[in-house]
Amino acid sequence: MKKFILFFFFLPFAAFGQSNSPDSYLGELPIRNGRINYTGIDSISGVSKDELYLRAKAFLSTAFPNFKDVVKLDDKDLGKITVRGIFRTDAKGGNLIKTYQEFYANTNIQVKDGKFRYEITDFVKPSSDLRVPDFNYEQMLFNKKRAEKLSPDINALINRYIVALIHAMKSQDNF
Image 1 (cartoon, rainbow, N blue to C red):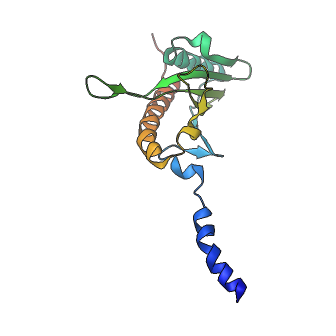
Image 2: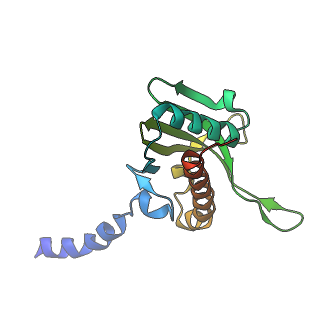
Image 3: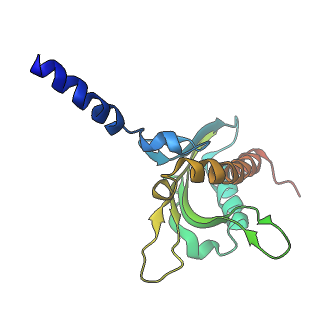
């Protein structure tokens, strides 16, 4: 009988002790292993690895004007390019105050003959205070309301970036 009473006494604490995983609060953002992760593979028949590499490099140098500063890996033989660039969502608000989100993310592009893979990961919110380190976006979006507010803008920006990347990889540069 004592066990039965103790069970009902501690049941509410056990129920409220359950918490949703952080992934459930990240709104529209795709999550893999607890981290924001956009991934895709696409094929383009008849295009060589070298041509796809040049297309990827041309796209990234256009997307990030300071391309030389953001390159982390540039290996033509492996067919890999990794950049860590800054992204900024569209500004919202009235005439006096406009708000936007700014974050760093890695773009990894790997090419082979006739196909390429992209991965956009490691989203980091830069800190405005020199004494406070930068932090992962997953940490910032711990709150459901905040995630629901910010994730659509971030998702829209990255999806536009991916569409532009795929378009650049599939288009031929004819003079």
